[in-house]
Image (cartoon, rainbow, N blue to C red; front, side, top):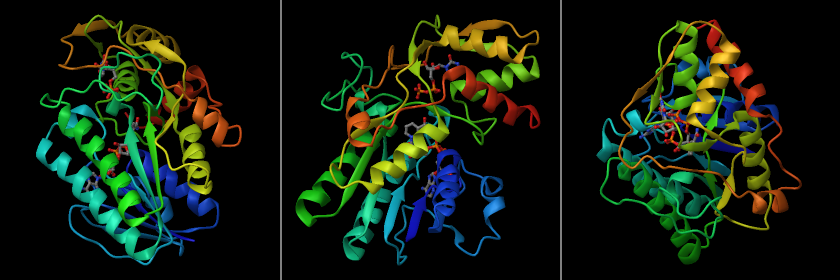
Length: 309
Ligand code: NAD
Ligand code: UDP
């Protein structure tokens, strides 16, 4: 198959391109390089089955492909808040452009949605049936509501135009190729520990997240795209749940060094707890289950950053 990956030069996108090429597919990767980097896909540029096009998904695009994975969107709070209007445009207009193309081509189209659609959840762990608790006018809203609107568009194109959609809600995923200045917690803590800088915990560190290693997530993507039983939304993530204090302590233990933990103000609307209910994924994705525990995934990610920071 020929497969279009938007946001393919980013953290998750570049791992997805790797995987699709390894499976024998042809890949067209489009990216405006806002948070992505050419270095993430440099090793693919000589592959005749891989093509990179620098393009912004806000502007229409046409490629003859069999499948589309829509990953274009900054994912880290400092980056998506840098230009919030652009972030909403990316989610909304990027989705409309992908869906219009999928409609014309009768191509299956995948949306990288997010656990942020649950906002600061009052149901724990979060099943797909939970409608969420999202502030529509806060600093995170450009991302959360953009992604929620994208889900709406995917389901309306499905109902109105029979577009063959797959919608995944991704929970915090980490691994090699995160940008050292990404700003998300795992890369921040590792980079700070490796540089001997203070580890910055926002708030008291009691808030929780569930961290999935990238390889486990990409396996889930490909299995979900390959099945015809359900269109989603489907949670994908690792249900292991940790406080940010536990994450900081584990990172310090694994990196060693002399960094100390300091506390910074908690950003507004920061969700207090998050853990995926992955019952649906386990059932539909042929026994899919995250295989890499946090400590192992952190070791691999630390190994990646060690030579770079
Ligand atoms: P990332 O920032 O590394 O990747 C996003 C990519 O999209 C980058 O390469 C960026 O340059 C590109 N991009 C941004 N705006 C664009 C535009 N207007 N046109 C074209 N390209 C554009 O982040 P990531 O972690 O790889 O996230 C990939 C996708 O997965 C995003 O849609 C994100 O919302 C979603 N997601 C990720 C996580 C996670 O934990 N990693 C969790 C939930 C959802
Ligand atoms: N966080 C932190 N220190 C950092 C970066 C983030 O304590 O240097 C916290 C942040 O406040 C949040 C959690 O870690 O509670 C996860 O943040 P991230 O930005 O990685 O993802 P998200 O909040 O979008 O889940």
